[in-house]
Length: 317
Image (cartoon, rainbow, N blue to C red; front, side, top):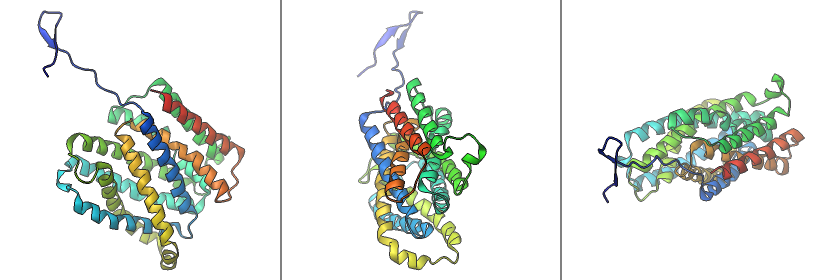
């Protein structure tokens, strides 16, 4: 259909160009992210509850990579743009470091302390997603993001503003985990946007193909790092005992991440990552009920504040 033409002020015909469409947060995308958050909380709790978290994570990575070989056989890898391959390299490195740092953090600190720090990505991601990805954040959305961030920091600061309140067992690696989360969120968003516009859908949906590609890449980088970290640990005995739980955790990770990748195709990265912080509330509940941790009242209040921020983001648009 030809585009409509309207007289310009100087009498020449000018084409009417539609305004750029800004992605909105739909109810479907919101639900996908919340479900992903719940699965991610259970996934992290399974790592914390394992006898040997580093071996446990290595088993997960290897199991996912084996499945990836079958996916690659059915996919048209030649149709993937070069820019996506570069993004995959970046996100694979970020994920490898993420697994390593998260493992060390959970070995040293409680889930109710480490998890909120590692998931406080909204404090930093919007400042990068806006200039790098060209996204916008509404006033109500910004308020929701700020509320999420305040709640997350309340969880792990115990309501105190002193430096010692922000530093404890496992927190150093938790902060490193946070930085890698910011990095892979940006790479993932950019790659999924490029796949959606320049690569045709094949027998394997983009989200699933991308997940297994980054899984294979991150495993190739994480495995030697994990081997160095294991040293003299009894990894063989741990592998025999915990491989069924590791497979279940790998399945949770797969479903959780595919849901996030699908949400990235329908909503801005800042909103998606912020809404996913509802996993903080789920993690606190799992830590109390399953791991028998005893978080302070300030941590629980912080988790509730996170939920309030999630609600604001959900109704922002």
